[in-house]
Image: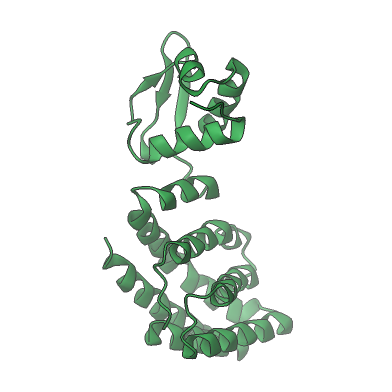
Length: 231
């Protein structure tokens, strides 16, 4: 096997854990990993430390390195999300992330309607118009649509004024991007989802918290319905 760098070794072991090739409870050793990947003990130790910090491995003296169950993983880590999107857990990951969006985006939209600055309200309206334009042109699977979509959801979370809601931006963006990169985003967007994106921006623009929450709930529900069909 070709020599692995620290980063590539983290990716290699992380992917094997995510895909179940290294199941929970499996005990590994530094020596075995060093031999298998043709790397130095230092590189192995560094990779193991990273995966420990992500909750995927645990080291114990006289036991070795144990693979931890999925419940212990740092679920919102974007690197972990990337491995799941590239592996056998992709569909479940996209569903889980969409369920997360269903839980927090309507609340964020309500808060955004109350707290967003005039500049943020204007930018949301612009992004919604861009999504509508690209969607009508059948470009829902284009890089331009993806960029506008991620920016739209980022801004709703940021303009909520709640730092904990805003902290969900990276994993949500990673899942949206992953869905697109795997060809799961249609060229012609779901009309219900797209119309409610536009309605959400309009409601935030006029500071209508009830409408902002309701329209956000509707577009996430439409996306979730699509996603669950793939599982």
